[in-house]
Amino acid sequence: MGFAELPATAADGPLTLYYPATATEQPVPRGRMTILMAPQAPPAPGNGRLVVISHGSGGSPWVHADLARRLVAAGFVVALPEHRGDNWRDPGRPGPDSWVQRPAEVARAIDAVGRDGRFGPALDLARVGVYGMSAGGHTALSLAGGRWSPAGFRQHCEAHLAEDFQTCVGLTTQLTGGPLDGLKQWVARMVIGQRFTDTTPQGLDDPRVAAVVAGVPLAADFDLATLARPRVPLGLVTAAQDRWLVPRFHSDRVLAACTTCELVAALPSGGHGALLSPLPPGFTGLAAELLNDPPGFDRGQLPEVDTKIAAFFSRHLLK
Image 1 (spheres, rainbow, N blue to C red):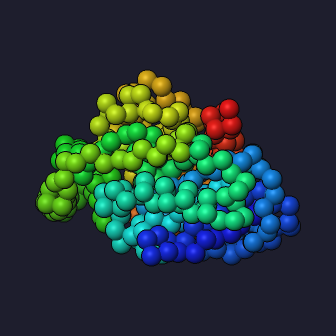
Image 2 (cartoon, rainbow, N blue to C red):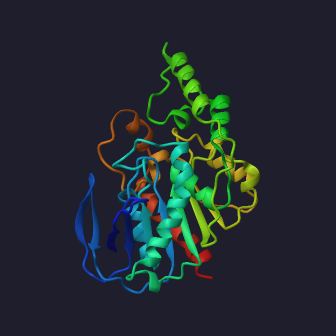
Image 3 (cartoon, rainbow, N blue to C red):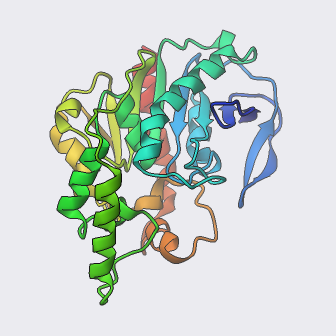
């Protein structure tokens, strides 16, 4: 697996690329992890298609390296944009503010790969795949034709704040059953009610995006009518023990409404961090509770999940 990085621009952060290569891999430290890859290796011929991965809130390119490896083995070039204000180096603006800008960041990532002399000439960018996890899954649903609004997020949190608390407040705090829970909910309602009033439908239809997979996506704020028949093939990956994005408000809701979607893989014992692979070490506090694997979850099943995701993209992008 080759590795390269396109530098940041005035509009966007750096763009990570994984791709087929014949050079020898070496252990490369990245963040809190070490990834086997061949930095700056000359690209080898692949299948001529690109898949863009949209990371989750506070995410990085490294937590999707195992999926990228499986996609590269199938011949894909894989690009991971760093979403501004919602990444591992700069996590300061997560939530609806980030969700508005993310689809355009994916579109500009496709443009950037096309301009690069090493990769652009070998790729057919008329048929691109998009995979996203968590907030990245929200990005993926938007690029599949789904429409949402900040006001829709507010309405969901007003109706289901206690039941889906972490969706609405992230890692800020949690409900513990203690005497402060009422105050926490009051503050959350006040902040969300004041900030998220815009009813304008948000989304982006990039005609180059031809297949989409959303993993444990944030989806409670979508107008389900726009996801009943997505404009492109749409697959989902679910984790039944997800405590950050409670499935009945998110992935299960999309599957119930969508008449053409495919359940690519289901993880009955998986939590929200199941699709982070490799899973970074050292989570503590609330992040550890929400992202570390629940007791009994077997990470040995993830290679099969990655294989199914790669097969979905091969099926829909290579025809």
